[in-house]
Length: 404
Image 1 (cartoon, rainbow, N blue to C red):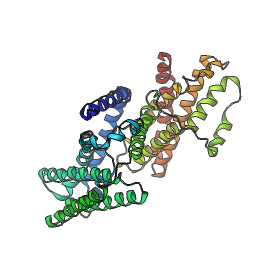
Image 2: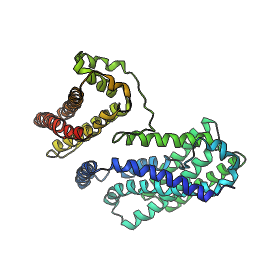
Image 3: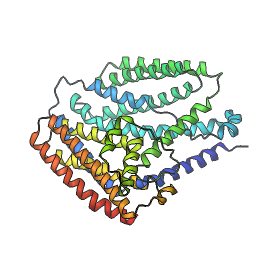
Image 4: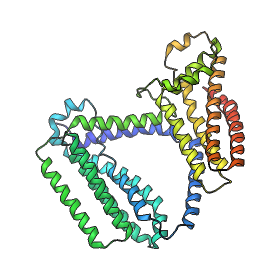
């Protein structure tokens, strides 16, 4: 006999234990300091922008779209694994307490995300409408219930195997979520809100009726759990080695031209290895491009002039810190120990690659400033970025390599 309460407790305990191990590496002192500066700068910019908020600003539309994406996204986290297809599938009807706990856990976790997003949007709503905090709290409680409705609707959709049903489910939920959030934040008549909620409940009972004679599609649930953990492993891999992560390597021929700048001699063996790893591994190249684009857009649109150089340096620091994991990328491969290359040459190659990437990022960030017609700031960003990249690489990163 399977004790479903004990099963969930055991699964959840194993999951949290594994998550905590990687979170210790991810939320280290350096990242926390960077996040504090980033959030502080964002809060200052946000507050300055709210001061000049025009009267006809479509706040309800923008808040509605953002909240709608948060409500519509997400699934019930079941923590199911592939062996469960053999051992738990035959007793599916007895797993109702297990799935109820999974629903409560998912609602709490995703409700926390909803709380953070809502708190970030609260100043915009209060500034635009002049309403009290109590009115926003009441709206948030309705949004939490809407989040629970979305999770249950998504759960019922997993009783169907055809792709069309899932697309329609997500589309219908998105429309209902947007209409509900728009009515709530625009101050629409209470009767309209009640009608939307009534229709949402009617749709839920209809889904429940057509799904009652169908069983769960376990392969879909297991695939969702696998993708969720894979996403977490990829993020954690930016900070430390993740043995469970299966690397995805893809040759990008359109970037092969960058290799012609590398020397072909024995001392540059690891230079070729690190550059090709960076170009062909999605984790590194994707991270690099995301930080360049986000940092560049922030430099382009940010209204403050003085702090732009600091923002640029912050993004260079974040990139350099995450590139340090490139050193450990091939540590588990025994054949690199056979290369007739000294540790000194390997270290020099790694530092050269990191400095080169950070210097290129400095140039790209400076181009965003140049596009905003800030010529003097462009020159400062270029000089400060390259100087910071040099000292960060050959002092900070080099000292870290000695410890490794």
